[in-house]
Length: 336
Image (cartoon, rainbow, N blue to C red):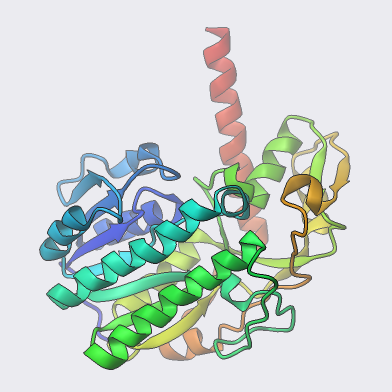
């Protein structure tokens, strides 16, 4: 392991959910951070705790703006490319925007990184595995995709193009790169918008509304705390031995969505009922989901020593506390 601090990191999407936590972690250890974000899904409030930090600079702009990306790339040592369309709901509702941001945006970032010979950490997604419900899924597992006419698989294909592009720059032009495939990452600051399941279910439970579970609820997922995911990213950024490699990042603690809903109702002491909603009432007709999505993180652990420290219990406790605090704050504003 070759840990270094005092570098300047460019984080695209740095005021988003994961980006803001990574920004804070880098600043804490002595690095400087340049954040580029168009605030389409990110929020300035996510950076509230560090907004006046002398080693943080925020730029309101898009990864589609070649001049801004070039200027910031020139000023940094390493780039973490997190910007992109997020969440199943957004991807289904705005497929063209998602494709443009995820493919053209990544191309601009990668080209600029090559121009200045900057190390790139590309954030990809477990969506690249498509409908492969086997598991645990390792980095060489097959991709199983549905029709390209279904927006979800178009998103999967776009993120795969990002991976292929960055790997080609590494192999053909020697660009130092690392790819991380993020599975379900959750924690404080995650918006309930765009189909993020835990924030949505928690807020429904706290308001006593029906808990809406899509499909039959038997589909299983694994949820990793954003602090554990941030630690994995830092370990990969600090290691020279991982250059050119791809890593799954996520928890292997599996739970069905209907059991998750039951846990949330219990923890919130809520009177909410569970309502099963067919997929075609939530998304487009023909929407497909995976029965199971579990990562194999053996490669990440063997290269970096990383392991999960925060459990689903920790995640739910923090997210319920955050949502309850938001609700209390809103209530006090209404009363005053």
